[in-house]
Image (cartoon, rainbow, N blue to C red; front, side, top):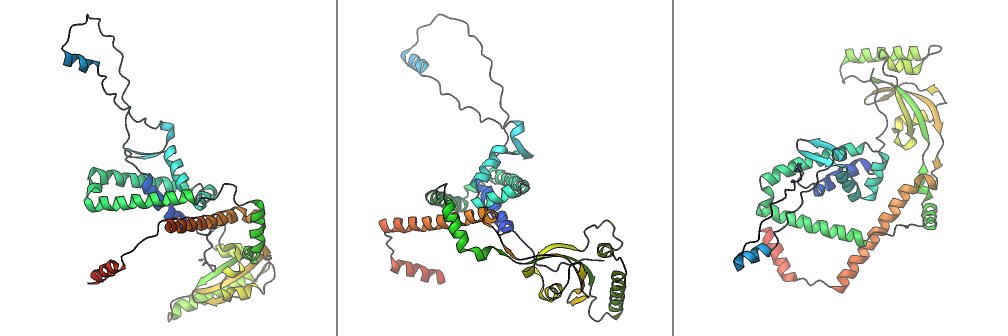
Length: 352
């Protein structure tokens, strides 16, 4: 017996798509060539025998007096305990991961804090990018003129974006508690949680249209289910499981917001008493038998509940405002001059 979802997907605001985009956007700039190095042992100090100084020509004496250039110290290799992951000769260290997290926007950092398992995806992405980077550099692909020009444009864009972020970051103590309270009060309606229902269901799939045999079989199954459900002491969850005893949560839909339930089913649910069930509801995918377990009344989330989300939103709006003001002032101080005639000619040429 199968169970079909009757609700729309409930997603955290902007997290799933946002995190995927954020990981892809920040992984590449962080990857430098990560060929693991093996640090050579320090050379032993050997005492040279003492000899009498011999007279030397002036050129040789000057050369001898000039100190030899000191070789750059080899880059220290990450200690084994500092390595988070490795594939082939490519490592991702704890420092790499800290840099990655620090480069994320506040919203993505908050998402990582709430779901540390997302870090596993980040590490895999960093490793994949480093492998690709090693192959591209080995083939000198980045030295091709077209690629080099595109890389320079990307670098310029990154410098501009990072600089704009630096000049449009609100103070650490913004917003104040007073500001936060005022914004919350002005937007209380946005924090209204709709009524919620705790539901279970039993689902019988509809056969293909015109398949009389399958339709008769589905109706017999539906009649058998109704007979079992109306029997004294019937266990809705056990009947939903059927022969699949391992499926402990079979038919359990959990808490579902009123506005997330299909209208045809919502109308039936709203007329149910607690721990009662509906008659079979025929939809395009089959028949649904719904049991109402409990109900939560609509309520407005408190300021402590929405504080983190609200702070991020207020800071983001202030940052955007500061950015626009900075750009407007910059253009005011350095007004751009455009050759409209040449620009029009360029556009006309591109259409040919």
